Image 1 (cartoon, rainbow, N blue to C red):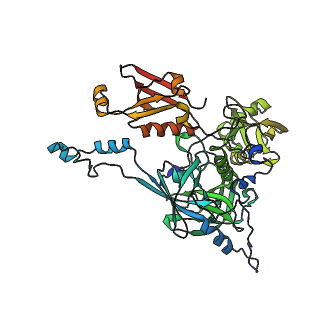
Image 2 (cartoon, rainbow, N blue to C red):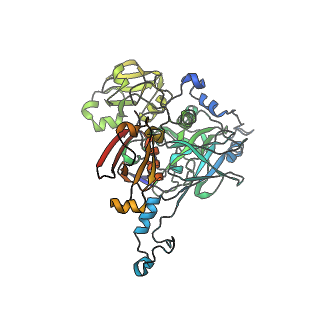
Image 3 (cartoon, rainbow, N blue to C red):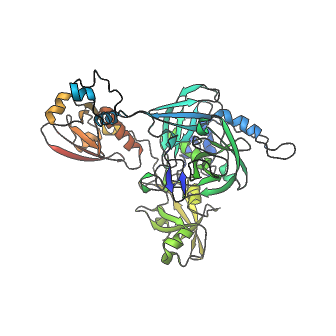
Length: 511
């Protein structure tokens, strides 16, 4: 696992929890996969799971961890993720050091060797993953495999596999991998909603590269939020299970299981001043993680709907906006401090200053619990919100929508297919002719592609995409694909034509 520690007041989050919107992830189309929003755990059917129920007590009535450990340890894998430097990074690294042969003798790089001077080395990280189907689907944290060019899986019996990334959701820090094979051991989904504070749980993973490690603890809290902040300043979806089972670097992506041997969470972060276990760990509940990977498997991307509200815990609102919150009559719930531009909640009658206290009669005490409850649904579903409006109780029905303001199912965006263009690298002669040291040329455009629509023609030389310099076709394609998978699907392209005309283009891959 990459050691990317983020200071957050008195603790360090041992997981790079990536940026995303502060809204939930939502269910499938009922018709295609027979999913029902009233049965939120039916997504286990997507992975053909057959549930198990183990004896969780000894004959004397004490908790029995042995069977749960034995049934789960073979389904938790070690993940080695390798991030190789791009061609541009390699060139930049070599340029930072002067080759003595070039400097003194003009021998260049001695036949292509760089002698290791300033050349970036591959970055290698380690983590854990959980097999969730007998045909090799694996759930893990996004930060474990983020930007990886190679993903190697090691099983408990030391057999190795190369994994393919099916898809990832930085907003929840969850990713889905696939290895080829049959009859793999797997852990069936449990019901994280049924977990109770004080209940025994096991954390199974590979801390410090110590494979097949099992630790025990209890559920310390549920619906825990405000555990650090993602890059870019946007909050992630956070409704963690807090546990005192020991979780250390390398446990990320591993299993949190109950004494019945069922998967109830994906271990993600720790609360620590040193970076190692110091009392508390946090796991994404399977009610969120399972839904995310089921969406990824079915659609290639997460179906994400919004209430369209700016929310905070009541206590936070009272401190941050005392004037707005001075007449509140409740101390628990999600305080509505404002609305998004397209807000289905506002359209339905929710007003600023309301406190959301329940979703479909399920109580919510804070922002994290509201996120977790709304996560059950898809754009187009209707939910009943219980509102406390300065002491007056109201029920408001809201039709959830997606971020575009409609109820359509979002399909995976293939950026390269949308732009309809191919690229080729500039030759040394071209670079000399144009006076540039980097750039790629548009080798061709499709009549139906976005490049053609925006007026980008064959021969155009791209210097930067979204302010990133590009020197190879691979770099250009990687940036475009990355934008296609992100929330913000805007491409900003700058370059010039061979006749010297400089041009700037803005392309929306989401249209």
